[in-house]
Image (cartoon, rainbow, N blue to C red; front, top):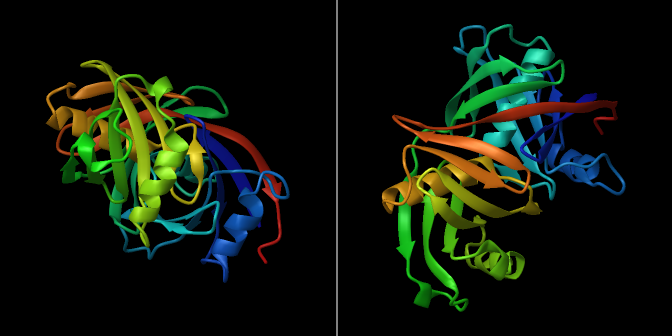
Length: 266
């Protein structure tokens, strides 16, 4: 089995384009995403063919590094677009893929180098599930917070200064409260109406360099709060993504091929 490794804004994914889903994809994710004994990644994406009558290019499956199944990933989808194009599974620059939460549209905007392209992923619509006040948390230094669903669950927490807030302990606690589904937790600092800064903790992974759906959730929430415009630069530890809100919420940024590996699928 060939695994190609890609990164989108610092989110690293191993991708396998196979004829069918392996018997134990969760075990494969745990084995190969391990940076010590495996290859190292935030998650394993598996693509499988769809019937010829389908309007989509491939089925998309995502397993976090702890083996847990994830519904969707913004940066994962963008990296998947690169893998499908480089693997000659599609020659189109615009196509849909099928995820656990429905069809998602991908567009290869520009081929930058042999190993890098700019890709946009449309994530659909977001639902504002709950607005939370600071007194609902033990940690009192947050300004406001909201729970958002964009195909997967997010807790977006606005703070005055990212560096003054300890994300990991807070995120672990909030994730436990959201069991068994869990929740992705993000800190945001609004710089101005066109720029926000973020830090991320993802269920099944931990602290990450970026989170595409988290970035989309954050821009959706800050737009609802009247703090940001319809196109926003999201500055994450792994780089800058651009989120736009129209009929659908979209994330644009680079997708970079890193390397490839031949491994056992057992």
